[in-house]
Image (tube, rainbow, N blue to C red; front, side, top):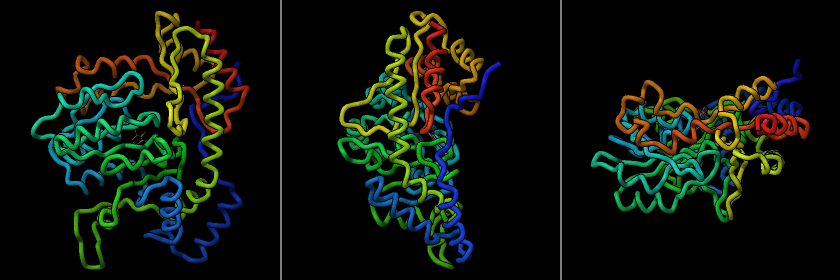
Length: 371
Ligand SMILES: *Cc1c(COP(=O)(O)O)cnc(C)c1O
């Protein structure tokens, strides 16, 4: 009965002819990976665009998390959030580190700084917060706690590409920040990611780590891994970088229309823009108050499906619900009331550059019809 599906996201794709021109250059050169010229060019271009001093490209957004933990020699326990994509916590598990879950702030859905100190033990070595939906964490307060207790801070900034606070990149906070360039993100290289940090010495160490630990032909400085990005995706990334500002602006227009349309629907909360922040509109979460709205989150979610509108319940279930983690004491939902509430009430609406007015109207009508 219904027309085409509206998906939650749609990838930003470079112009195919331009991409072909760059592919031709790669074919001519026959240099397809291992720090080739497009790889170098993309690292330089990203440093400039993101306003960060150093960056290392990776083949996805999970390996930089794992390598950041290795590079900083993190062990024991790390304080993190249950309200994220599983890769955040998996990176700890792969390094033999115990995640300690702390509840989130209901306004931003980020790690609640007020709850961090109570979770610190003699085994704690770091804090791993996530800028969920690209909303900046309270980096000042988190750094103050880290400084007091001598902890490292690694931000999972997978959602925060291009986000700035008072004109400065959010990626400069903490010891390191990681990015994902997965197809579903604001900026993509199909699969890809990066690690951001503050000094030249770290650049060396990270670039060794992502290349098996090779410092030169005969020297291995660490048990590294293979995390290298290839020339084809670096070229693709260079082209996508040229249109990412337009994409963020397009997303902003979608957010403005959603907010207008949802303002008068009782029981639906949206996130507003924050003062002094350059947002990237990576996701558009709505939170449903069943009493006021008259339907549960899942009822609305499945009604949207019937209308061929594919929202996503990011982040439900919480990471602490998965079998790997649920046995941990800190994973007990009684310690995480806010995260449980947000996970049970959220739907991320379709959000991408090029979502049409017709589609937005249809989505708003669907939500209106549930009231
Ligand atoms: C997408 C994402 C990742 C992982 O990125 P991949 O590129 O898919 O490996 C990590 N953390 C968060 C919060 C993400 O959303």
